[in-house]
Amino acid sequence: MRAHRVIQGALLLAAAQLPFVIACSSVVEGPEGAEPERGDDTNLGPGSSDTTSGGGAEAPDPAVDLFACGFEPSCEPMSLHVSPIPPESLSCAAELVLGGGTGVLRSLLTPGPYIDETDSLIFVLGDGTALVQTRERHCGGEGMACGSTPAWEPPSQHQICDLVVSPDLEAACEADADGCNFWYVGEGYVTNCRAVEEQTCEEVAARLAAK
Image 1: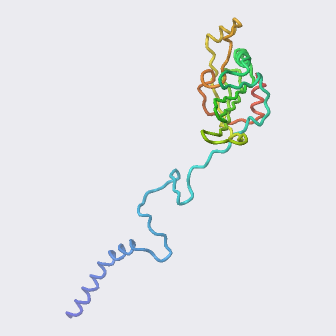
Image 2: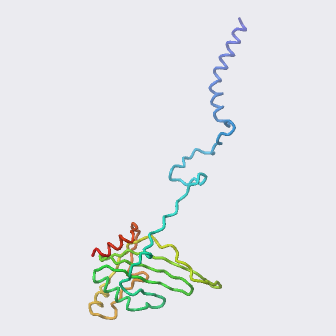
Image 3: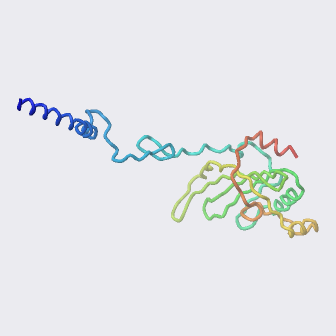
């Protein structure tokens, strides 16, 4: 009788310990080939950069190259190193902008002393704004030789910029004075640029012809 009670007590003790055995077995290393624990339970989520799975930001697609569209400038293209060449480009640009029409301006900024160029296409839209795209090429430095002229870097994303016309400029143009010049190279007259949805050559041509 006493032996029967001892066996019954042992069985009850084993039953009481069973949940603890199961719980402990869930935290030990799993079978061979199972994925090891990460060390934390942080949720990476779709917006995180988990480099172990090949994640990371994708490079933006190349911009539509408006330089390859073959648009003819409305004024003679201007180059600026120390002073604008030819200077008549500035007065032609002023007439275009103040006249409220559409057209194409092109400029080349060359500060030097090495190959350091910024080529700009400015599509005057007739509403006080312009669609702008630029491209650059650079080469050289002190003690360095450039060799052949480097190719242009990929063009910039398309931007819409405001065309600023000051009262002094309007007065000078009305009086047909020497100050009737629209400086469309560098900052000042073409300003407040912001990104815009890209347009094809055909779409730009349609905008220029619409007014």
